[in-house]
Image (cartoon, rainbow, N blue to C red; front, top):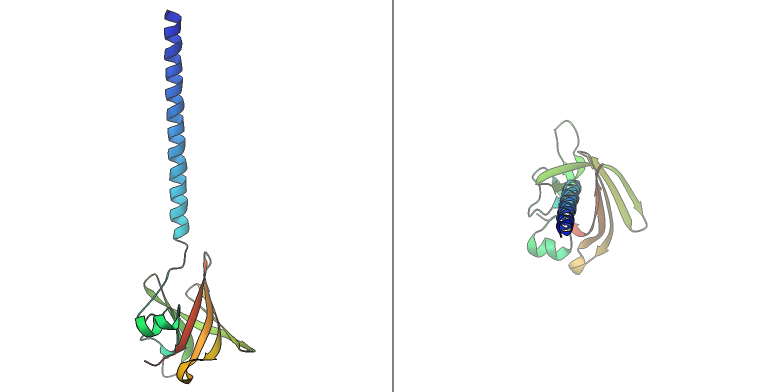
Length: 169
């Protein structure tokens, strides 16, 4: 009888030890997953909507998810135009978008027009932006731009489908 009693103590001890090891493994795995998800979310480019044109830019075009967002909710994702830096130099063609609550200015590097599609490339502040759009004529003869833009840096890349129009501010 004594022998059986010792055997049961040993089995209880082993099961508790196994349970504690399993608990610690689960804890370390959860910590690893949490750390990984937090570090990867910081790499995402957080482009934000603004509700007014930038004071830094002589606005030419504005873009949002769709025209309704621009006209009814006054939302702007991307603006293009010219930044007038000094009297000695001509205005610089630029694009402005808001990333992490800061206006980010990107200077125009290249423009290519093929068939009905225009591709504009901008760079600055560690970001590259490729704006691709087509011109169409909407209601009342207004020009509408439809396309996409891709914003990227060394860590991340995001793509947005957009519609836009000329600035009438």
